[in-house]
Image (cartoon, rainbow, N blue to C red; front, side, top):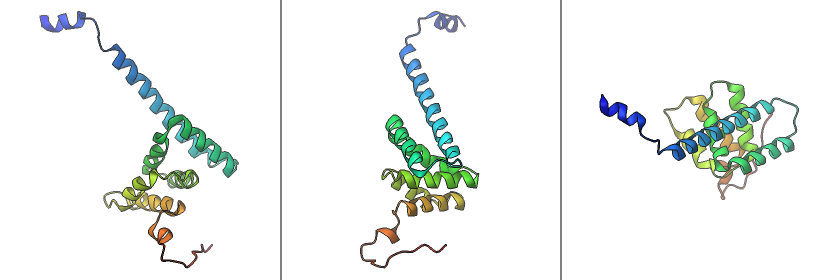
Length: 144
């Protein structure tokens, strides 16, 4: 018991590490908040170019962590939010997200809806086998 009490009176030498963790935690909160704001903005009347500007602004502020957080956000239950994230990933078209999305789309342990969302984002980015095969010269058309 005496040793425990004595340790409480020792000066704290980890203040620098603790303050760095607080700054890192605040940065993560800002990143999550910005991703959620962008998801909500997709339901507004903003144009694609305005959303693209917001995406590029977030990329310059947060770096590659922003695109990774968008990919992680696919693990939501709400279908409309996942659709918004797919659209944001398609508009962003960041090549760093392709391996992450491929991993999600092939992971059989994840729910089918999340795997499908990742595959749709890949298709929107033109990163599927069907869109990248060089031998395939047949133009692809969407049926509406």
